[in-house]
Image 1 (cartoon, rainbow, N blue to C red):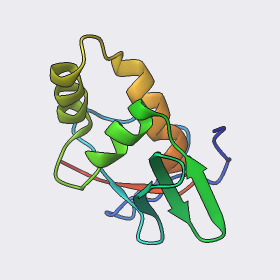
Image 2 (image 1 turned 30 degrees about the vertical axis):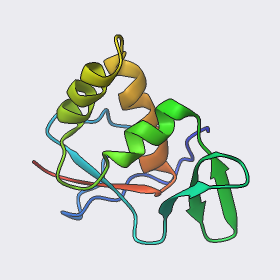
Image 3 (image 1 turned 180 degrees about the horizontal axis):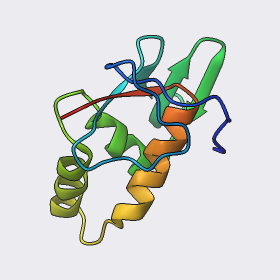
Image 4 (image 1 turned 135 degrees about the vertical axis):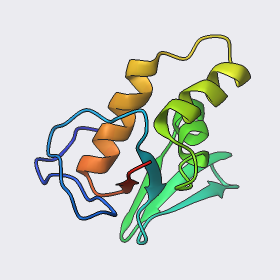
Amino acid sequence: MDPTRTGTTRATTRARPGAELSGSDRPRLARHVRLSFSRTRQRKVLLHPETVVMLNDSGGAILELCDGRHTVAEIVTELGARYQSVPDGEVRRFLTRLVARRWVELSDG
């Protein structure tokens, strides 16, 4: 998924186009996006109007924790506890791309 150049959506109405995520940001799925499990495909999918995005296991695990309560730093820590190695930069880049597409929104910690 390549980010679009549309900027970011923040719950506090501040936008940070192209900015890195802060460890204190609290990501959550946008209202028009839903995380679901496809029984046919046997994997998690991200549902967006007129779009179905197939997620790999790590993408699904990240988005499960995007509930608006967990900070980015807590998400990285939680995934590190589940799996042996979780690159912080990869999690942040994944979330940055989803914020740019307006599929994930951020609120300040």
